[in-house]
Image (cartoon, rainbow, N blue to C red):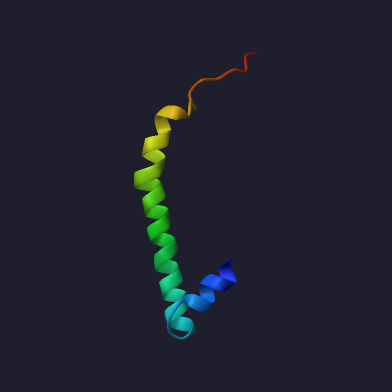
Length: 52
């Protein structure tokens, strides 16, 4: 998959690297600010089941 994506990116190696970095940053931002806040109510991280 990464090879396919790398071959599809336009430009030389430097431009491809910058484009790939921007794509990763955009994907991370969408997950961080869009997907994770929607999933937070479904995940119960504050409920502890281990007792002493």
